[in-house]
Image (cartoon, rainbow, N blue to C red; front, side, top):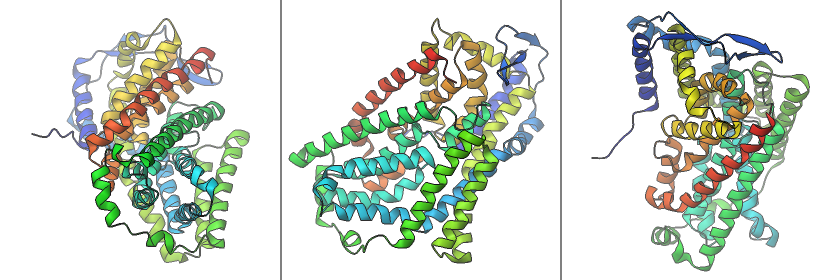
Length: 462
């Protein structure tokens, strides 16, 4: 019998029910807070027992709508950003950029060498800036024929968009869906810590590129070393390169749209760093970009509205996950057990060194990622616990957020991830073969993540 984990929504609602039951047996507890550098933090020496407030069936059923209300700002932000990037995709500028570089491969020795680094970097930037994740799935249909035509294999074709975007997502420096949400919940300035996060992103992206280039060169020398050799032989017989051969190049409209996108990211960086922009300002910026892209690409009002609404609709599930995750916090808070759980977790995370405390947080987040692999949902679920826990164990909240991000490094081999399963199904790669190929790289990711948590923990990175 095949083991199947519950759907994310079922899992979260079951967690809500467990929390409601826990309020009947877990004693109430409370920490006092104090202001430190203008930020409200937990006083680690102030824990005391208080009267518990058991949450019944009515409270359980009301908690999701309360979660929706309390997380309304973040949910609205996610929906607007989702609509914006659907409009960007509707302009076909990103697709044109990829086909343009692919066509240049046959004309330039430099492009032949740089093709993997260029594309992995582009997808990684997508994950690191606008949270590219599910959006990478359709690109598998472009990159597998390209990889096979270049005498690579399906693994390379799937890994370029999929692993590239996932590593960018997990080590993001401007991703509103994980960094932005986590920092908002942890009361940390939006997109602060940009420099060190960018360094982490560069390290992991470079490692991914190096591994893929080594593997691609190995497969080009001996295709039989590929875990998908027999499957790829069949694909090569049915290979259709018409999509690349018929591409006539990027238009002025495509270039203008890409310039708008780059300009928007630049404006967001300046606004956040210099003017302290938060969710409202960044959402307004993305909405402005969507309108300008619609005008420049001449989408027309019907196509623009359909694209924007469709993009927002695609993230309704994410919005509901955020609401349910927030509901867990509401039940624990109303039942007076959230501080009790914090108090109980301290011995497991606490260490003589903040380095080990940060690394334990990373391991915990990696385990949680197996069950809740929505970056936004995981941030909404765990950061209300991890942020004050960081105060208690001598780790900065900024470091706790980085540990949360690194927990998502395991997504490419998680069978509970819809993105992972979707990519492999589309690519025709058996899950077991993919995991065997990916496992050495995952071990490297894990060890490097542990190492990169050392400097921020030692320097009390803010």
